[in-house]
Image 1 (cartoon, rainbow, N blue to C red):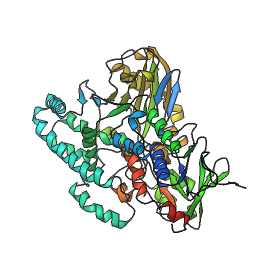
Image 2: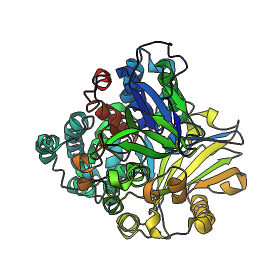
Image 3: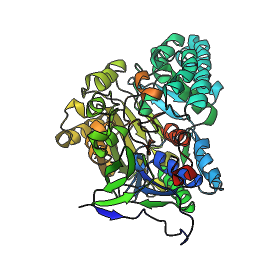
Length: 516
């Protein structure tokens, strides 16, 4: 028998105050927290339910032996989306968050030892392009122009608007045509640039949000323009500082966060979400439910099949999912000042490796890495004189059949050997703390379908209207935010999903009066 409860009432709610409609938010990632803040600002009584013992979701913070490890997101590319949330709450973000502009944004190191320092300054970038291929400077300028075109039409025009109906899709079609959305990002880079290395540099960005540059639409060139306009930043104290700041905003708006509260089921009555049942058995009632959990997991595991006509088991399981990640977190007793804050350590293959990961679901022997060294900027991330690192390797999701429990240490050793031979010679003797995350963790800890790190792969046929909608197609009163709904993954994407949510939310008065 389920334990019933009244809606969770924040401690600071005044007794006898007018009732607010209750919103339960599943998950406290950036998308969930942003949605919760916007809901509270709109007049909802908000409670965020988090499965883990601390907020953040994929932006969880690990603390080991004096080292601070951000679990995943580390690159802040659209600070204005965070600033909007502080402004909504009548506060200044700069009072709580110290953002530092990166220079370079990141270093792209090729397997032959050469590297490209990717920066925000256009003249410095042109000089770097010319260093590799003087004949590609004009092509790089044309690439930037196309990226800016996609930024205006795609990011500014479409990212914060929910694709809720066929009419929304039809309204967006002219912009999609103008952006030539059927073309891939790599084809755009290849159109303008002849040098193979420059083509790699200008097409890497979708990998940061779960996309294959050879498959995703060239609309994703907008990331280049986004970074050029707004920079790549680091939040001092780590992305955990951003999570802490957002939780503070939520509580200041009267919202509540409950950790160690895994949702086992979204309850539905007569086609409408009525609340959630926790793994503990407790039932929490709500007027609306917002899931920041993986959408495929939400539909497949949190909602009974009889309530799903659109997102059936067959449809969910037949989706095309993004890659997963293997991440090795480690701290060293000495520092490596030659390693920048963000570094891509590329392997010998590009297209072939991505084909193995995304299409063949085959774990290859070679790999490419994103090496994160936050202590290059922020000494607070490690004990004095030490360095904090993580080495992230894109890998296939669990359809690869890899036995990660047995193979994780072997893979970690391969990553260590490669780092020792390339950018961190002799580092292993100085490693003092170490642990890994595998696709199993994405499935079992973060509840991501197939252990995919970014939900459905962001190809054109699984984007915008074709991606799970911000307002559920199946259940009234159920909404989606985060990486696996529109517009997609990455900090800008998940924060924009919370803005898109607002465009389809009923007004609190409409709920209280029974009109929604």
